[in-house]
Length: 287
Length: 164
Image (cartoon, rainbow over all chains, first blue to last red; front, top):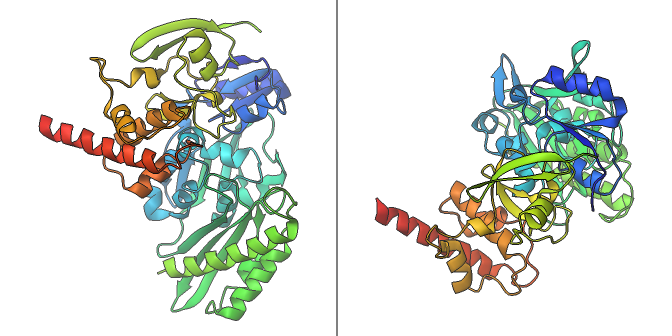
């Protein structure tokens, strides 16, 4: 379990990190909390010859509100997300999901930027960010651009982020006051990746659903934004027929693999149950 | 690959050494500093036997490069006992409540519980179980570990109140 050799860099600015990525190309990898990359390096599934550790770049830390957006620095740890008063008040689904990730030691190290950036389909935050309509700010040699979370994921570990770009911020339109949200995650034991999980965000006025979004974790090679399923809820009173339709439409887009978490059809079935539970809890949380 | 000069504060003492950047912190602690309290259990960041305190956070030292911890403050189980050599309240409580059988997980358990009680001096049983969910014990069934941590919390709180 010894990783391959590498040269270690600890730049103090985003520009410094980009310069190193430019210089070393695909031989360099960014290191945030390291709890995805280091296990991959121990297995020699990743063998970078240059490690660019982001820990000394102060501008990548912190959680704030900027106009109508919540801004989370990429190096903010899952622990910091979990104890954030601002997120608890304005966007509780994010700390709710962070509490379901791994264990305390991993949450002290693991960052929200790493969780969304690396494209692991088992990670929880990507589906949350798709449901919230978040954008990821990517900074490269030619300046910065924003990539919608819903467009970011191409396949397992393949994303829109270029080799010489750094994902610096997650920008989330502040959800409407009174929205209801829930993240339901089925897992075999505490700390596990999801067998299937669902994020649901709703607004409800006088008993009618006025907006909805749904996204799914770990039932395909990317997170899934379940647009049709959410559409089936809008304009309804969230009665049994509407929920049944949404569950069926969500199940239809899943493409899980059979693995230690169960056969593919079981995981699709679990995804449906997670959607059903998350709708019910989001509805309860709304208002 | 060339070695790098590493400096850190471990259990209150400044230490330095030469190590390849890829060296895992647990290997540096055990093999270069002879601090064999933190154990290597799974080496895959699941079991928590290698838990140490790094800059005020519990971490699994099998999943941290020594290069990342260059300049850091580290506390291992060797640094938990009181300055006069008597056992820390957690160590005493693990002994008193039979919080260990084989003892392999114990250094990680106690080091983790130390940080948990810093952050939450009065945890419920549920909070203790959630707080140590990154530490596996295959002997005890956790019952007595939870009791020990709860007892240590009471002891530390009583000492703190008496001091005020």
